[in-house]
Length: 459
Ligand code: NAD
Image 1 (cartoon, rainbow, N blue to C red):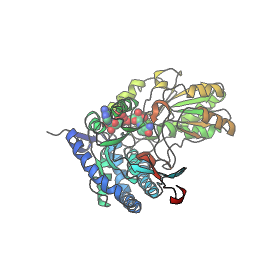
Image 2: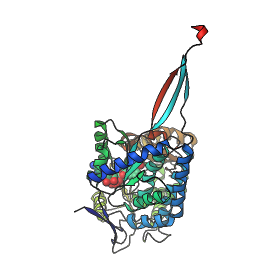
Image 3: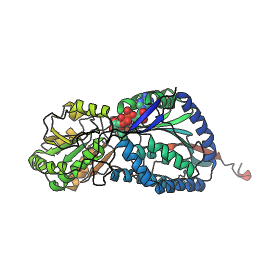
Image 4: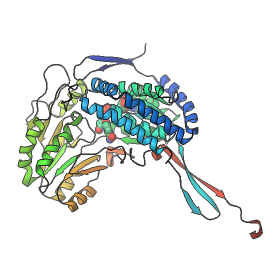
C-alpha cells in the first residue's frame, strides 16, 4: 500500500489533508516525463516561453487568496505573511519571464574567427524545498529554471506540500506543457534522495538544513551534478551605541519572531554595544510583548505556531519554557504548537548562541567596540545574513564588508528581494539565487569558435 503523509494545521492540530508519498518509481517516471517536456520547451522561441510564464503568473495572481489560505492551514503562517508569500510567487514568475529574452551570450574578440557564448538550459532541475517558506522558496528555483528553458521536478517538505501541488495545477491550467513542472510530495530520504541520485536530473536546488545539504552535496559529487545549497543561519543583529536605538529596538522583534523564528535569515544573535545594552533591552521588552501572537487567520496576527509538535520539542531542547529569560512573550493556551517569544542572556559559546534554534528565540550579547562586534558576528560556521545599526556611514560599510555573510542590511532587517542576489557564505550555502544572475545559474555556458577563412588572394 502506498505510504501517505497527514498534513496537519499547526494552529489547531486538525487534519487538513492526506497526501500520497512518492516512491522512487514515481520519481523515475516524473524525471522521464520532465525530460520529454523540456526538449520541446527549450525549443520554443524565447518570447513564447516568456508569454507562457506570464500566463502562469496571471493564474497565480488570480488565486492569491486561495494560495495564501492554504499556506495558513498547512504552515500556520499569519494570513498577512501568507498573502505576501503568494504575491512573491507571482512576482518571481513575472521577473523570470522578463529575463527570458535578455538571457544573451557574449561575442568575444579572438583572432582568426568569431567567438560566441551560448547559455544552454541544463535539462531537468530538481528543487527540494523546506517547510518554513514552502511557496516562495519553491518559486525561487522554479521560476528562473523554467525561464532558462529547463523542466522542474519539485519535492516539497513532508509537512507542507499543498501550496506546491496547487501551483502545479495552476501551471497546467495556465497552459504550461504537461510534465514541465511536476510536484512529488514525499519523504526526504526516499523521494528526495531518489531525485538527487537520478541520472536524468542535471541540477539540484536544495533549501534546508546544513546536515541534509551536506549529504546532498556528497551525493551530487558522485555524478558531478550541479548543486545550489541554501542552508541554515545564525545571523547577527549588531546595534552600535550611535544608532537610533528606538528604531533598532522597535525593529528587532520582527527580525527574530517573523515566521515564528523559522527563518533562515533570523537575526537570532543580538549584539549590543555595552553602553546602550540596558537601554536597548528596556525598549525591546515592550516591542516583543506587543508582537501579536495567535490565530493565523486573523489579519492582526504577526506570529503563529511552530510547524509541528516534533519541531517544538527541538526548540524546547534549547530553551524549555520554564528556563529563566530576559523577556518572554505569551502564547494561546489549548491546541496548537505554540512557543513564546523568548529573549535570553547568553555567552557567545553557549549552545543556544551557536546553533540554529529555528524558533522565536534570540540571545543578547554585549560587546565593547567595533572590532569585538565583528569578531563576535563572525564567530559562527554560518554566514547567511545580518544587520548593522549605526548612524555612521563609514562604520556601516566597514562592518558590512567585514562580516562574512551573503546578505547584510544597514538600519534594516530586509534580506530578500527577488531582484537582488541571495545566498550564504561558509556553511550557510553554496551558490546564489534570485537577482540578475538567477536565470544564468540554470544554464551551462557554451563557447563556440567559428574559424573565418582568410580572403583567397591573401593566401
Ligand atoms: P530539512 O533539511 O530537514 O529538509 C529540507 C527538504 O529536504 C525537505 O523537503 C526534506 O524532505 C528534504 N530532505 C530531507 N532529507 C533528504 C535527503 N536525504 N535527500 C533529499 N532530500 C531530503 O530542512 P527543514 O527542516 O525542512 O528546513 C529548515 C532548514 O532550512 C533550516 O536549517 C533553515 O535555516 C533552512 N533554510 C534555509 C534557507 C536559505 O535560503 N538559506 C531558507 C529556508 C530554510
